Image 1 (cartoon, rainbow, N blue to C red):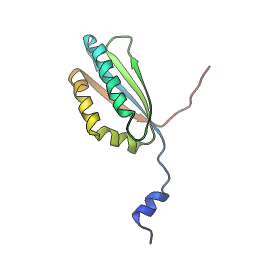
Image 2 (spheres, rainbow, N blue to C red):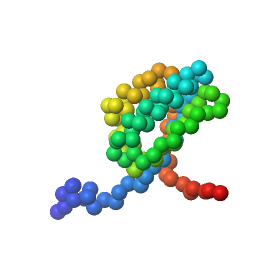
Image 3 (cartoon, one colour):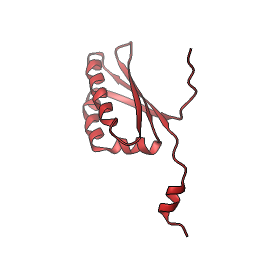
Image 4 (cartoon, rainbow, N blue to C red):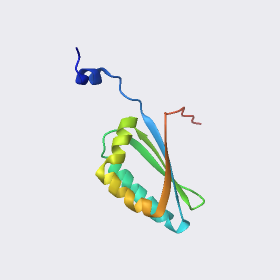
Length: 111
């Protein structure tokens, strides 16, 4: 009978996921929010499963978005519990709210 380690080793790898996380803040805090988000992503780059991230500043001066790719939903979930990530979220939560959503990668259409 195979052990649980054998079963896990034979399991297909998880598919990559896309995180689109929209942050909302008061206009005077947007520059600060962007700095904190950049610091957060710099921490995430060293974590297992990180693929890429692009930060976007809203033209209305009150929103920012993070479009990130992770190797799997499991890698993303582990990142959310990492002590450095939790600590880096503190200053963000002090000035902004956020709404994260996970997506399966879609079609890329280019000119």
